[in-house]
Image 1: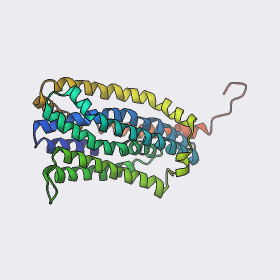
Image 2 (image 1 turned 120 degrees about the vertical axis):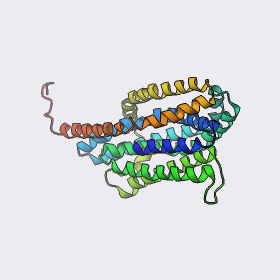
Image 3 (image 1 turned 180 degrees about the horizontal axis):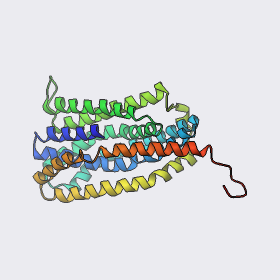
Image 4 (image 1 turned 90 degrees about the horizontal axis):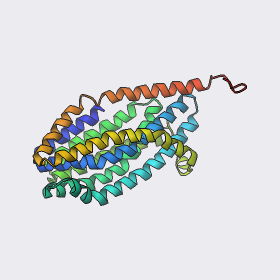
Length: 296
């Protein structure tokens, strides 16, 4: 969480050196692109809960099955959101922003990051599965690599250093997409090659289990609605601030990115608590007395 917040701050600092229009385009483009993405990525909550229960119960086959089915639906969601952002970028921006320069820059930004979104949702869901299985280090390593590449890519591509072209806002979008693809490669490579806590098997991915998919959706829907209430309210507030002008919106982006460091790390403790609770619930299920005459 600290790494994710840090890359947001670095993004804001570097894009902010270009212009208020550039910062507004990236700030609003990120919110438009990722608000819906994070709502659907809440599928990871249900995934983590089920993986933690089966891990605690000592049922690795079911852990692998849940991870595979979650990965399948996450790939479908990621592809859908990527296409939606690419095709709808101009329409979404023209609804919210009046500045024509910001609309052009923001539309280009959203279309480029839509490529990374295709890989982002499966990565978030698999990272949630790994956390549910007790491995919180691999998601951190994945984030460390991805975010380091993002910051380096921002510096190189936004300003045109080391012989690379100066791409400015488009450079920030390219760096973000590359970082997300690399982060996905680390996580997917681990669960398919290392095969420790979770073994992602192709045959399990293709074996569609409607009952399990429904359980995942049922567990994740409340978390999705909760995320929608948070992200949706932030997006509406941003739309109101955008009406005040480009400079006002850019100033708000700087303040919000700095503020985020105060609360984002706290989410790490909630992940640890969820994993411990889920695994303990799973382990206790094996020792509960059998029901006799309808009474435990």
